[in-house]
Length: 450
Image 1 (cartoon, helix red, strand yellow):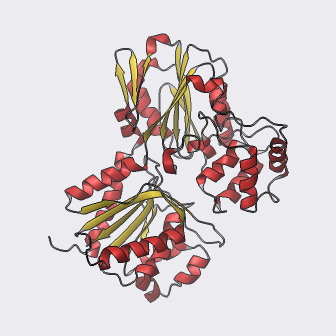
Image 2 (tube, helix red, strand yellow):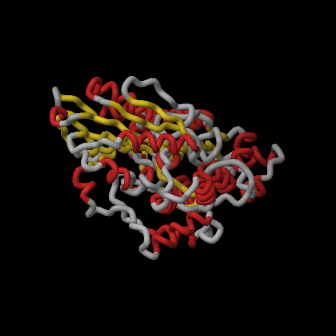
Image 3 (cartoon, helix red, strand yellow):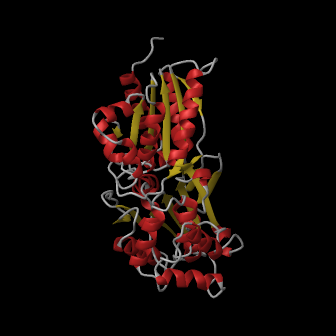
């Protein structure tokens, strides 16, 4: 096969990403996971598990949900269950409202919650006020739910939650650490929503956006037993130097939890979880497998690395540079054209005042390390189409990215120091903008070799 040009590799990389994102679309995933057989609701998860509910046994079916993908999930649920739904409330990111018959939609902000996040959470709780053991609650959970559905613990103001959220997002803490703290400042996170819905039967349909598909971390695990404690929350805040400058209300609550004055979040022995099922219906592998299949059909030799890539974005960039060197210079290189896929979620500790999330930061850090490397393209993007607080999904770079930036008079070293990867990639033509998508299953990295 003739060697592919850099332009073709870049086009293929973007097309493969979009194909994978389509496979993880919330509506499509729900259609593949939910079935009605006469009066039986059948749910299938990605691990092959199968759950059945005889709908005749329930007085009502109520729907609640929150997350970046929960709107499209709710659309599919209404189309599947039709007249079985008695009512519902789903919280979506601002600008992603959908028109539904039975399920109310509330728009809120992400990644920092606003007053609408609290209003939506209150409406979710209100939906559960007269719950009974004859009810079935279907909970639609996806990434972003932690911010979109916010109900602070007693004595904590919204502004306090906003302050600590912003600090955590720029601290370099990973999502497990961030959500461990969120769970101990909330009335619904960390399994507390399951307690509010008890004694109803609950099934949570979950699109995972965390490494390892930890149901106690996705959207801060509202219907999952919590394994973290106030001690964990305190230690994490101390680890990143955030405790002393945290709002007084947060320090007071965490200290009270440490002293045993406040009950910890519910664990596996809580009776609420006897009637609660949590099932993953899509994750990062859903997208990676679709990409690998598509790449194979287009003549690429494929290699799947991992769906659990994590760590600081710049450290990961160094690892990828070494990997690319090995793949290209090895005495026994991969057959080409080659497509190497990986996924996960990196972290970035923001110390400058520039723009750009973890994927842009990864790409700009990698660009000098592969400078001059011919026939190699690297893409890194958030599957939700959003990298940090920008309009970009990430970046798509090649061996000429660094020299292009230099020839334009751009200072890559200074941009990295300022965490201003977005600006450099935009000017060099290496920014990847695809717009908001219908899924959210962490990040994807693609290495294409001609």
